[in-house]
Length: 94
Ligand SMILES: [Zn+2]
Image (spheres, rainbow, N blue to C red):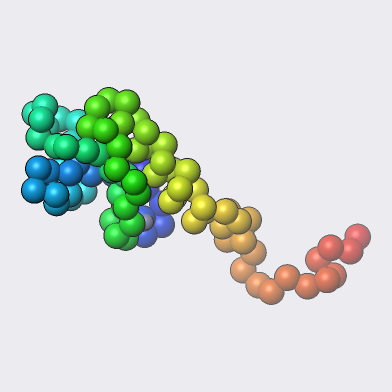
């Protein structure tokens, strides 16, 4: 699981009827042929493009999850989170 504030990413598997598995399902441990595709997904409801239901597709999902969903959300947050008041011009003067 890849976790940031309020988001919990996972790799979802697409069943033969077109529905996707939930975050509790470890798709890598399911029997072969269980899924027709893998897709990066997040508990917030986000889901990325489907990949092949293979080890390569699984790794691609993990990368896409980080790159397309979790990372963009985190831009700037580590810096802004440390400042608990309004930034003033004086803050940048020696
Ligand atoms: Zn999310």
